[in-house]
Amino acid sequence: MKVELKTWAALGLATALAGAGLAGCSGEAGEGGEGGEAAQTDTAGEAGEGEGGEAGEGGEGGEGGEGGIATGEASTDPVVYGSALAVAEAHVIAARDAYAVGKTAAAAEMFAHPVSEVLLDMDPVFAELGVADFKPLFSEASQAALAGASKAEVNAKYDAIIAALRAAAQKAPDNGASESKVAGGIIADQIERAVAMYARASEGDAYEPYLDGYGYFKTAQTLFNASSATINSDNKALHDRIAKALDLLATAYPGADRPAKLDVAQGALSGASSGVMLAAS
Image 1: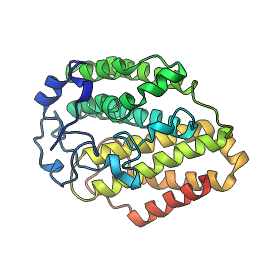
Image 2: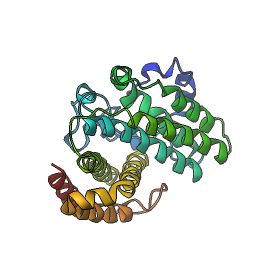
Image 3: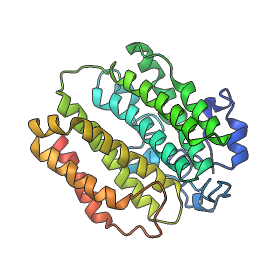
Image 4: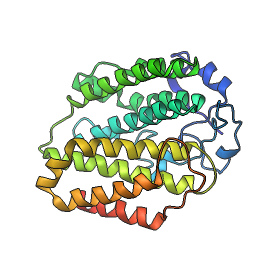
């Protein structure tokens, strides 16, 4: 299975991640169902189980960037720009919560992945918009997780990343779209990713696709909590469809620990996501 390290070596993570037996995030590496057979070196036995999928999930592949972000449009489209930040946030939410339940190596992996999956490709956009480089925060969090730092220390690293992401969000491009339109588009993207990853996780017993999807769900939920009133005021149909989709995803992703069975109907999840995408378009 191919692992994209890109600048991780420069960040001092290449050796550590290789030594931990960590696979590429669901979509960086190849598509075969071999991810679930990778060496499991996580303290909870879950590390290195990634499957292929994230870069191409939900028809997103080929849009530029391993996280399925059309980075060429990010400097002018606030939904694309915000979706890139949301992908990074989803990974660190998943990392924080995985660490809290003892998935040490999986957490380290999740903290590191946004660098290669989206942030490197966003560097020119950030430079154009005046966003200071915050990639080192991800490597610091990953190293803390690998070192077995306390939950408080890891949470502090997480908080620093979230603060940087919120600051970067303030520099989003303005193409005239309303606040609710932008928020709805970003949330729809995260819901679609969560649904796609649930389908992939259901193909086997690999942990990482589930953890990816969990992060996307939690990010969608966080963004919706912050923009629910605005979206409801401007587009009630979108508001209600997002709420319905998030209710379903809350059942699909009850926590960072993967349930013994993934038994939420994929058709219901896909239908809910399609409804959100339609209302957001």
